[in-house]
Structures are given as structure tokens and as C-alpha cells.
Length: 284
Image (tube, rainbow, N blue to C red; front, top):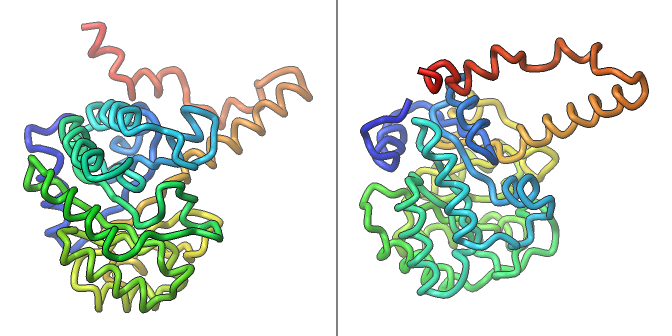
């Protein structure tokens, strides 16, 4: 159900509480509706998810800002949940960063994260990432903060410095990004619950944890994350990975047996799909 309260304000209200905000990653509006139906408080739009699912290509900066804003906007408008979106490195220089913030706000997005990698970015859990200087990232953040036409819009600074520069550098960079105008910090690829706990205690602002599978960070349960002081946990590719594995198993079954009959119990029924789509409401 769409809320009359702006998405950004709803996200601010969630952040003001004391419960961990779990935001599963989606790449289309139907999945966002499912996330809402199950009962999650927020939804996340992953750049990797969009690139993988919508283009069939890797997450190496191939989507334009207008493409991401348009797709994320459709997701945001399909659900009453506040939507957090991956905005990569800001899509260019100061003028593009300003335009990106304005476009995401107009699309109904509650908040975005911008990272400190060079423009030719890599997945945050791959080796060989290159970062811009602290000053250049501060410039990105200050530009984005100044471009906010909605004061509640949540600006999250992501730092990928833990892997290459170490924990202390990630902490120092994050504090500088907060001084430049970031509302939250996304420390990518922390390596233990203790690191999350220490980071949350020392950075002086809410933090976001990336609970992606097969990465550098351990897969911590919600209770562990909350006890560590994390405010938002995202699960960027969990749905995509499970769907792809299930689809592969179904296709293999059809190819080997000639029928999907033995897979029916693992499928969403027609009635369940129509209910999620509010088919009856549209008929009326």
C-alpha cells in the first residue's frame, strides 16, 4: 500500500527507531511487492542486481544514471516501502552528481549510497579496487548534500577502503565523509562482527551492513547486527541468486524428464501470483 508520507521521511522514521532495518535487494517491482508482502520495512535496489538481471551483464558501471533512476523509481512506486538505491560513484563530476540526486528524489527514492571507488568501479567484494582520494570523495558527498531538494533524503557514503587500506583508514575516511554531509556510512567488506561493532561505536553515525553471500563479510543474523550497532542491513543479491539456482534446477528437470510436474510444489501458484498483483482490484 502506498503511503501518503514521503519515502525519505519514512526511512528517517525507521532510522530514528531502535530496530534493525532489513532491506532485501530487488530488481523489479513485482519482487518489491513480495518483499512488502512478507513484512520487511524497506527495499534495496542493487546496481549489480539491475545490471545482472536487466542487462545480463556484470556490475562494472554499464548502467547510466537515467536508467537506474527510472528502474528504481518503478520499484519505489510499486510498494509502500522506502527504497534505498545504489548510485555507484555518482555517475560523473559535480554536475552529474547534482543531477543524479535530483533525479532519484523525483523518482521517489528514499536514499542513495555513493562510493569512493574510481569511476571504473568493481564489485565491493572483489580484489584490486582503486579508490579516489579522501578529498575527492568529500567533494562528491558535499555536492550531493547540496543538491538535496528534499531535506529528508538519506545520503549514504560507502567506503571500499577496508580491503585495501585497512580498518583504520576506513574509519578515518568515513568520519571525513560525515563532515562533508553524509547522513550514514556504508563500510563495505568489514570482516567480523567485532569490526562492525567497533565501527558503529567509533564512527559517530548510523551504519549500513552489506550481507551479501560469498563475500568478505560474515553472514551475521539480524540479532547480531543489531547488537553490533548496525542500523540497516541489505541483502543485495539473495533473491537473484536463489531465483537463478531454482530456475536452473527447473530447466534441468524439464530437459531431463520432459515435464515440470515434479516441480509444482516449489512454484508460486496462479492464485498466489494474482493475489500479489492485486488482479481482482484491477478487474474492479
